[in-house]
Image 1 (cartoon, rainbow, N blue to C red):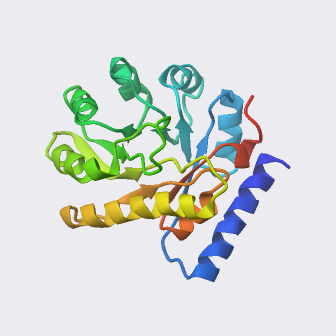
Image 2: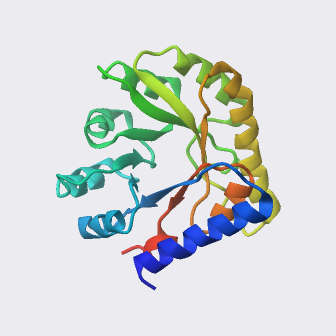
Image 3: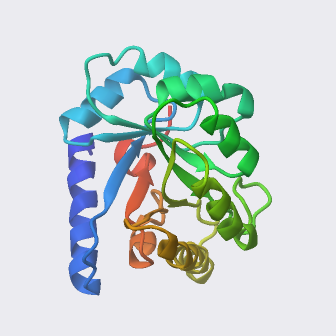
Length: 222
């Protein structure tokens, strides 16, 4: 199937789920173009996608340099090393993978204008995944909230690598509960960035407002 067909099918799946489960919130689709070239990004923009996600700073730097004149929101959805902060700030409009106070401070001190960020939380408990532990997340939110130039827009997680629906739902519902706890400190709604190609419908059921899709849109990685 073409990218256009995949995108339409995904949108139909989302709308069907929202109608069935009486979900009112909108869902933003981020097309994750890891390993795909700039021509794929251009095709995604042509079908109506306006949010592009990349996992690696260096790959994004090379790719986005070939997309001058195209207007879209650029999300860093992969791990950010402290020595790549300067390049990341040059490449991205949103950083979704802030997982420590040290990283947040490193970003903040380099900024002269507001930058939207998400806090990444490891809600699956899997040691292979990045993100702050759930029991430390609210403290980190409170500390980051006081840093200049950082605009905390929401929380992000990667679901567990499993076919066990209960485990997947547990990871997503935990992020939602953390968001609900933190919401009292903010006068605008915090986003939930959770759900990927295999579990985005479960994530939306559990409250996701932002899903990160690669294979579901583009097929297997190159």
